[in-house]
Length: 346
Image 1: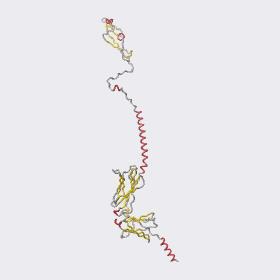
Image 2: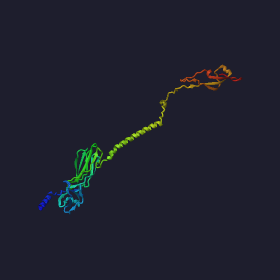
Image 3: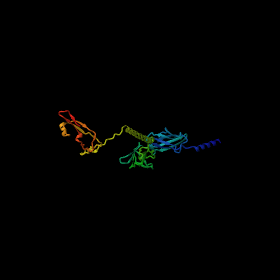
Image 4: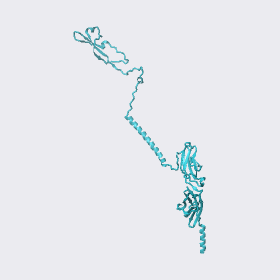
């Protein structure tokens, strides 16, 4: 009875024992071999990994990869760069359970994505894209682009070419481009493409590089700058109005005298100037010395002028006509006697 029970338990263990998972390997950028065994899910136990090229001695993995605390892969370093053209052998082992596999890495090389993807509008009005790839001699590329965030369009690029052209782009449209690479036919064509490069864009949003995250602080500060600009403009207008008011109060307006254009023009026959007011005329009376003998013969005889007397009681007409007065009212004479004292007649 005990023997039968032990045999039954052994058979049950063999039935439920799990085979180690398959290992998948490929070369990463000609630097190391990447192997993983989690395609069917994360394994329940940790396995030990060993690998070798050709007949070289077995080497245990020095760089394990883990997921949630469970080992799921290994990066196995190269000993010789030409080893990829040979066979690679692996052993995945847990206790007495182990799995051996053979891998042909000749057609399983995965390159790094192209770098320094840039865009430039050429002098021929075409849009040119350029990129860098470390293994450029045997590498072919594929470009994909889309316009205005629509469906991607893909174009192959010949081996060794590291540029692409879009003819006569529209400034009002947005162009977005990505590139990926792999080894071409000249160097044992690989079955694995690299990851897509960071996208670059040109067009409507004036952006040339989407690999760099957009500066969200700029979009947040833009409305603030607009508000500050508006407030500054309002403040300047208020200061200008205040200054004008002060200037008007402190500096009264000086009236500019108006001149008669006919006088300034210097015409040959200028119009005479007539005053608009009445000026009193002061007539002059003359006192003369006359002899007594001649005073009887003529009252209007004048010998000599001795004194003047003015009379401002007579107004001057506006038309400038002469003022006529009698001789007796305008002239006083003095009679002179040779023998006796002077007689003065008025």
